[in-house]
Amino acid sequence: MANGLSFRSILDANKLTGPNFIDWFRNIKIVLKQEKKAYVLYGPILGKPSDDATNEENEAYRVYMDDLDQATCVMLASMAPNLQKQHKAMNAFYIILNLRKMFDKESYTERFNFSRELFRCKMSEGSPVRPHVLKMIGYITRLE
Image (cartoon, rainbow, N blue to C red; front, side):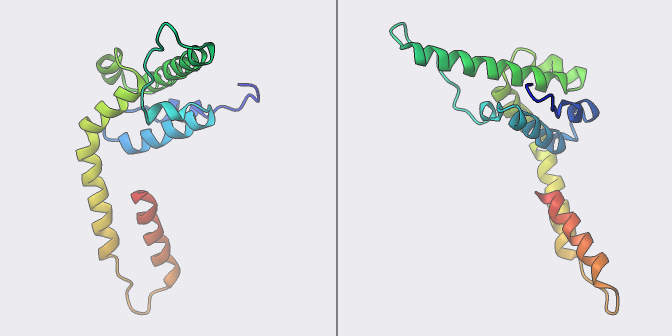
């Protein structure tokens, strides 16, 4: 990095173990956005240019593949060893698709539970407003 600023230490402290998929994915997006490589997570995957492609097309493909490889390495390095083994032959785009299949049901359940708590959240008569609002903000933040 030219400016020496790197958010990769976030991933060292928060490796993907499975149940923390939502938090891990948020951190992956932060790190890759800071490194200007987040676009590789959202597809479409560039196909290899044809033999008669221009130099610009070849260069764009090379840059894309380099960014995809770097994103894949960052993701694999921030996973628990068992998940690394499962995903070592995939690129970043397919890793995310597979992880969503594996853990989205858990994240759906987690989001449902936070939504339920948010909608059930009622302020007691005579109690201060500030703690109630902070509690609701916490639920909303978790839902994001």
